[in-house]
Image: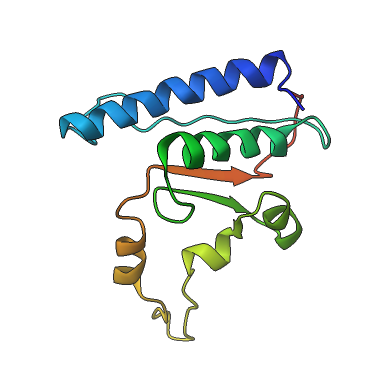
Length: 134
């Protein structure tokens, strides 16, 4: 399957940003770009191709850049079914969202989570909203 025009436009935009990421890493200037971070939203009704676009994004990152899911990028969803569809994780599971004790103290390990995010460059969250299609 090939991307439709809107998907292709977005993927080109995404690839341009990844090229900047790659160049910044090569030049040793990661996180110095005043335009960081890139925040985008792909939205659409069910069946409009959002998950396909995520699949193509993964392909670029994994095959094009050699990035590993869960290290340099992560694909997340709020529900198990959607996480499975994008071969990702639920937000809750991946983030290790800490439980809260009755006294308000955290049961989680914030240090562990900060280490987990150390090399993270891209976070993709599926099913954040539904509106008009790609």
